[in-house]
Amino acid sequence: MGDYVITVPGTVGRPMDEQARRALLAVVHGADPEVVGTEVPDLDVLTLDEPEGTFVLRLEVEAADRAGARAAALELARRAFAAAGYEADAVNVGPPVVTGIDVG
Image (cartoon, rainbow, N blue to C red; front, top):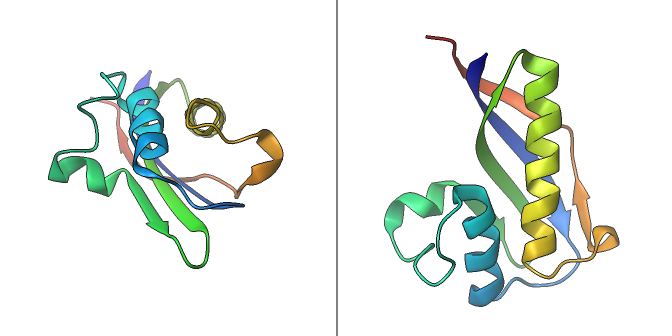
């Protein structure tokens, strides 16, 4: 098993308000949604270009291999957007890319 950093690109069909952002980040971080998103480090997890509706999520997952890490990241991204109030057809997720590995 190793820790993988996965970059997940995509687009959203509607703007994301602050409550939705906190809910999404709470799923990613597993923290209280009332506190998540208020500190600068959280800004690196989700990059959102509102006018274009494009986003990039940078997720850390634990998996046995790259394929497992990509699958885990996709599932985490889907759960996070669902928690933020987005229906599955309102989010288009692109192919996840492994951007870092720590097998130590």
